[in-house]
Length: 129
Image 1 (cartoon, rainbow, N blue to C red):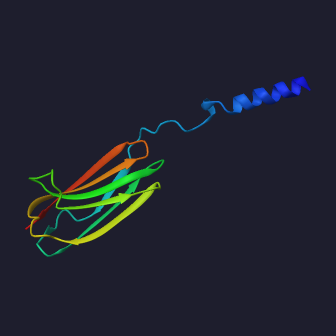
Image 2: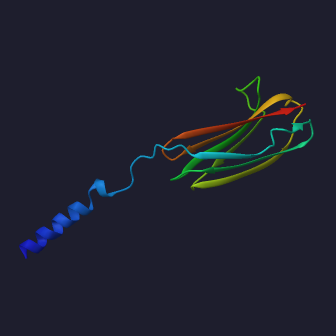
Image 3: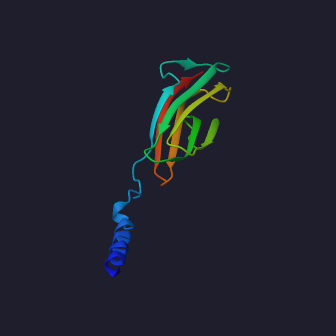
C-alpha cells in the first residue's frame, strides 16, 4: 500500500511540473494585413472611404485600434476606432466619409496588442484632396 501511495504522489508531482505546460510567455507580435483603402486612389472630400484589414495572433488579441492621420500631424487622428477583442482573429471593416480636414498625404494605421502586450503596427499611405 505504501508503494502505491508513493507512486501516486510521484506521478502527481511530475504531472504538475511547469515543464510539461505550454503556457510560456508569448513574444510574437500579432499579424496585421491591410486590405483597403487602395493606395493608388486619390480620395476627395465627401467620398466614401472604406477601411478593411485582418488581425491575427497565435494566442489571443486584447485590443485593435484603427487611426487615420494627416501625414503632417501624426499626433492627432482625424478618425479613430477602438476594438476590444477576446479572440485570436479580427476582421475590421469600417466605412466613413472623407472629412474636409483630411487633405494631402494621409496615413492609415492599424495597431494591435495581444494578451502578453506584444504590439504590432502597420501603416498604409494614400492621398486625399
